[in-house]
Image (cartoon, rainbow over all chains, first blue to last red):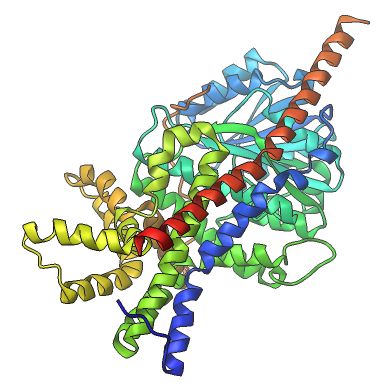
Length: 500
Length: 52
């Protein structure tokens, strides 16, 4: 096929718009490169392995009977001085067996497990945490507060691995790695496990390197008392992303946030696409709210913090506006197809060719980061963009063999593989970048229909979990645009988590 | 040395070894990045040499 450069200003503008679509992948790849340099800036040189502050563990619990027994027992068995760790379960007016479980634990571990109860519940995690914080900060026992979730199970050494960083008074908060650990693993948990490896093990290492973190892990964040008091002693209740607000406030007040990938804990993640959609919609809406609230800190240098770092800002906004990048690239390609045919093809090849190489680099690097995730989730990693996107990538990377393959496979199926068919295939590939998100939304809708639900895992493999997550972001834009109510939707958990 | 002190000293040694081990893991990441880069370059070369 012949390729030519754009011949008109519009052709150049549209070609540039296509290439801008690759920016999120490029920014993410820079993140992986930064992560590989983590040993240069991993804060271990300023950590004191013997530092053991008195820690109040806050566990918000709203009807968590299914998961609390395991997490409390594991917390009591941690490799941390027993006189320096107290567990406060903030029972958010639960109506199941939560109060009885916590009271029984308080009897078994006197002074180490405390049951706090709110009379009126259901307002959300932030309100529940604030009830606990009021109690914990009322006396001077606690030197640090660990905020976690009822279903999170900490590995024995993890609290010590977190607390060692608080020896540095410049550090306001430390977070650990939350490993997806649904037991038994299911098709969706494998995707989430791989996604967590990318977002946490790679991207948060990269953020350590540039000295700024975007979001504390909701289930594994250790905050120094000094930091908590500096940011007002309360957790934000005005947005759906209270962890992100805490992260921003900590850094704006001049303290750093550190990620320790070796401080590991296990958690169960949603088992259905509908549950995942609900959780991610809350996260995406929260991030939109936070972006609006803290818009003045991005891309602006400050002596207090590094939130203005250019790579960090690009990462933040390319994630937030990923659907816009994809739709923009797709729309530009389709327009080019009509107005400047040759440049459309070269832009398409550059965009997808670059995406293919960056996809390979990112996937190989992330799988190398964690052997357990690689063994369990390698297929999810490969199919993360979906088989249809992989087909487009394969056509761009290996055009001649793929053309020969199409010429062999399609005619017996009654499809003539000629130049006209090639043109139609190219146009469909141009459109697919946008259509994939629509397809992702349709798969989510199918997960709500009894009878066809069984097809959902296969359809996700075909369409890709990536496009589904992009569709969630679009849904978040729409929810924010129409001013949908800010309500807390709890993610249902079963309590079946691997603990080794 | 009291048993409590021995216990504390043992815990301290373990914590220091853990920190050293964790830092060692971080130093190996650069090799993982290089392996990923090598695979990517190999793919790009294969495309240019044989598949176009």
